[in-house]
Length: 492
Image (cartoon, rainbow, N blue to C red; front, side, top):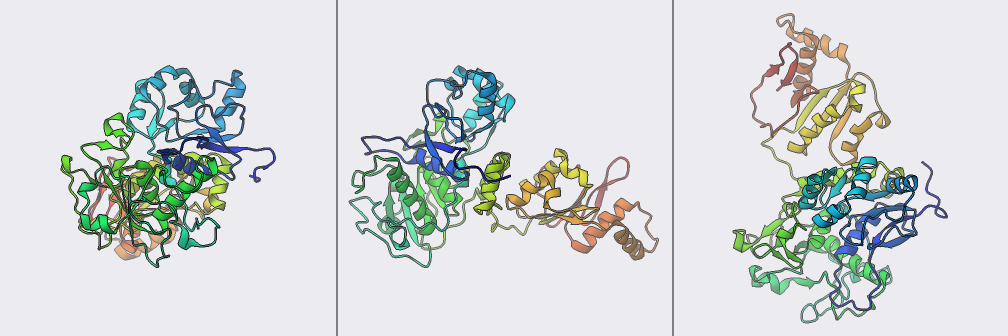
């Protein structure tokens, strides 16, 4: 589509409010706001989260519903106008209480019936939605899509060695700036709820930061702009300097993980800075990180952090959520075009370097071009990537197809997975196969095709309607299975 008209179209996310008192102001919501803004072609404004659509009819990305005094679309009393605004509003990775869902059932159900199921940041919110028969799914948090690579965040925008300036605990780390390193070598501790589990040697060489704006912050942080600068400086350090981030804040851990930085998440018998895990705020999110909670039998196992910290154990888990966000947001052509224009797509998969030699790493499907439009065949490929995220998946079709012909299969490539749609020359392969077997084996063409793909390229052949339910070992014996009518379903 044509680029949006900046004089008429509006694009907003919810943002930080002006406050006279910034001591203890938590940047977590602003970090979420930045994650939403990252998908917009431009930002025309920030909306008050307590009533974001008042006097507003533009496009809007929101990931918080647990505030305000009623349904988010309450200002649109005309049904047609309300549905139009719903279609321009993305309610993704939302966190809402059981009471809020119950009180606003009519509006929530209308949105999901006409626009899209709710993506829920918390597994608790997802379950409460389902209890009320409202369409929903667990999406994790939009901050997992944070991308700020290459940003220089010094006050004058020119000197990246000042990126860490003025964010410090006054009692420690008293330098105003850090030297730009050739390698990411800083240990950052951000609001760890139990620092006693961190070895003293690690604490002595760490840099302590706050998600809350500290009282000693030397700039006027009451304005929206300065709050955003504070968040951006934090994120810059996670990306550009940190070899590891140690925290008890999900909106520190999630963007750091999204930027490829290992995260050690510390809790104390489930307690976090914002309360206990049982409130549901973090349900389903902590599997992304390395975990430490000594009371729960999760001790510190990382030594003095001199050696490289392993990649986050939940990187593949996070990649699936990132792909899901893209699949949701790309339905808006403005967001889709902006993502491609600004280099967000294809996504850089966090788990791309986490290869495992003990499982299969190559798969083949034979499909018709029309199969690329069907959810059943898409789900077959998705099931392979769920268990083998770093596998090469080849989809063989009878004709040459370009990216515009891949249908919904394009989301796999756009999400960073190694899926390729290739031309299949049936006649040549069958002829080659019959020459090899020289009449000793009497099989139908589909069996010969599957056999030749595996013979020439290795890996595993699967019929297009076969779903993987667990990992396939790299040490499977050669062989094949057939269905009740004699068609090959799997061949190794």
